[in-house]
Length: 178
Image (cartoon, rainbow, N blue to C red):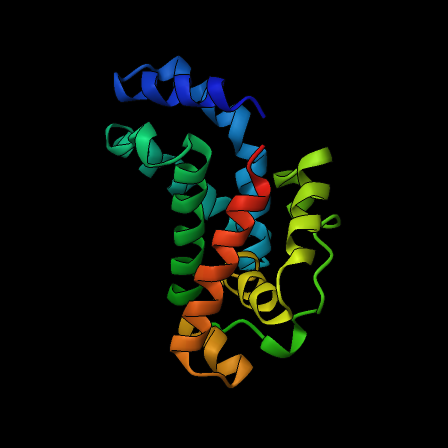
């Protein structure tokens, strides 16, 4: 994915450019759909969440600031939170016993979100984390669980879970930088 083009299209959406929004949807839609589907596990819910996400992206494009992170991170954050909200709305809990460990990041819907070298690099970086950090990050950011749900699943204090996530994300950030 061309992150510079994505940023430029998002900046044009801020100005109300509908063609830029259409381009943004074509560029990021499949990857965001894969991310959302991985969280909600149902195609019909994922389609609805994706639509809600892009409506929010359109209306809040002016809130995006490049200095705070990439356009992709901003957009995927919106989609992720919308997916988690969808799960809560449906009042269905994620079946924690069905979560596979370890998760193979190079298969399934996430493959659409992180392609080629990016997926292999992400998998390598995840392998460098401690088992606890890797598990909490997978549960929180790939399975879409809240910190509280991760803590209950792992039978670990929530403060410990938050520390593992924070340290794991910091290590991933360092590892993923060129």
